[in-house]
Length: 332
Image (cartoon, rainbow, N blue to C red; front, side):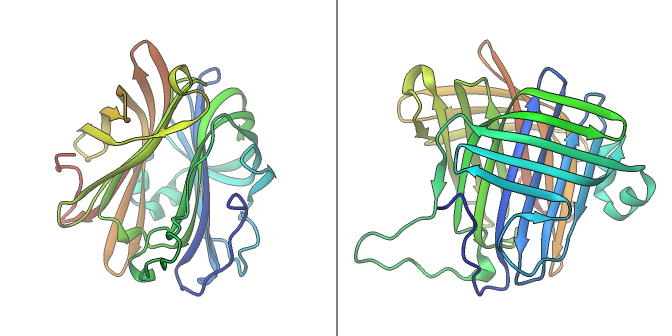
């Protein structure tokens, strides 16, 4: 049931979002799409982002009007559940701005005005290659779920799943056949404001159909640090995922405080994995509310573990204080 839409809640900032990413080594194209329904605020957050092989990025963001939470279908982007946790269809038919320098999205108004706008089309099928991880926390028998202040919430329910992806992406006159891609999807529901997390680093790593992981390292204003996530390794665990118990994370940054490389040691109950990533294309996104500015840098990343090579996203969210991302200087 959790793969479908959830009941609309009373909280003004109720959000139900779904996200899909992918990368195909054959055609050299990667990307991600997201729809976040905010029906009580009357709109959806709709984003498409495609990293082209020549380092350009085709990007679009809009807030199409919605008044229900019946489906993820807005602004030309649609997610269709063919079989829960097994097969999804993702389609988009709409515009994109093509950015030769993706960092121009630091100033979205100017970036949309000064870059070429062209038609874009996406048709993909995403098939599960591992079991989903996550869900909505449930209280023990006889206990009540803790009350959560919607004004301070980020998501009550959330799961992630590694996927195999096929289809096509058309950007203007360029058509890319996605024939052997791997990716990850997530689905979240419950009240959310982007300003309610001080910083996080979300790594999605695909190292072939037999090894993948997703982990989040986050922190608050008091310096507390949290780690979560899951890993599947068919060589040792079959088709089941195992929880990630610890992450040691080290990042290099350029002069704009964009992460350029990532090194992580990921620990499960009985194994340790050393993962290295080189970010080959980044785009900074912005969300503002009540005088706070949140920056999310989306870095398409080449990952390596031993002799295995793969791809995925390194997503770094920070609140911006005095012009700097708050998590960049922390010992993670």
